[in-house]
Image (cartoon, rainbow, N blue to C red; front, side, top):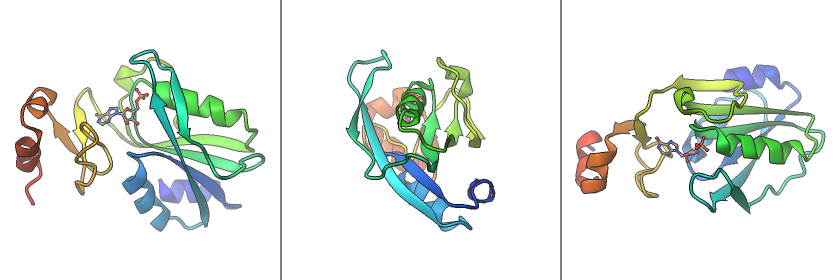
Length: 166
Ligand code: IMP
């Protein structure tokens, strides 16, 4: 994806990582890019469960008007987050606006959202590690692992240790 984004944006690009899950992915990706990206961060928070309504809790520092922008996500699930962010950033009149995600679970999509750069398609299984959390923890695992939510709820530390022995 770093090569693809670099090839598509030879004039440079603004990468916007969506906090917090996409941080390890973004960090690895920028180190493989052949153009010099500018990076920025955004954080949103859901304020009503399952309504898809979210609010910005950390906004960009940069003005993206007239810039080529790629949003960097860890995982796109229902698409509600990405849909909201693309609409929000689109209003700021970037020259182009694309989305990149490490993981895509298209089977659960509620809102169709364009994803130009996709790492891996996954099924309906919970994933954690490499930025992805379970209850804000385990983002530090050095790879993505599949976890059974019923077992995770029980004794997360023991279960994660068994999934990801160090
Ligand atoms: P969406 O708005 O439903 O597309 O959800 C996207 C967000 O939900 C991601 O950025 C993650 O923070 C979170 N998420 C969705 N599925 C998982 C998962 O399997 N593990 C960890 N986080 C997830």
